[in-house]
Each structure stands twice: as C-alpha cells, then as structure tokens.
Image (cartoon, rainbow, N blue to C red; front, side, top):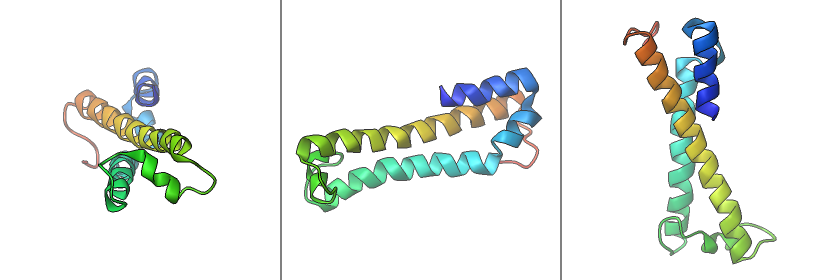
Length: 107
C-alpha cells in the first residue's frame, strides 16, 4: 500500500511530482535500508547461536521481554524492513516504466 500511494501520486499528478516526493536516491536508500533491517535481524539471530530469523533468542537483548514477546517484536521489525524495500522497488519500477527507461538523473 505504501508503494501504491506513490504510484497513485505519479498517475494523478505526473511523474515529476512523484519524484519530488520520493526522489530516486531516497527510493534506493529505503530499498537498501529495508534489506539491511531484514538481513540484520536474521544475522543477529545467527550471531546469537540460533537459526536465521529464529527470533526467540532475541529476548536476551530486548529488555523486558520473554521469548514469545521477542518473536512478536522481531516479526514487526522484519515486516517494516520488507515494507520499505517493497515500497521503494515498486516505485522505482513504476518510475522507470513510465519514463520509458529515461530517468532524469538515472538510478
């Protein structure tokens, strides 16, 4: 839904207006940040001796949580990372397709 909101801005107001609100550099940054959040959470679990994205171990570094609550919080963190990445990539694909591959500054 986040990606669709920027695509709708582009459809209603034009690509230049959408690019003012989500410049190419910001979209690339958010895509990378989302991947970093996702992979970083998984790697943190690995470094603590569990499987990739096996969240229950994270209660040791999350104050005031038990294993079940740590799972819930960690899933939210991972989903935020996925949301950033999907939003940014969807908008980048729309921007490239709507400009016929000729972005103003290039990705």
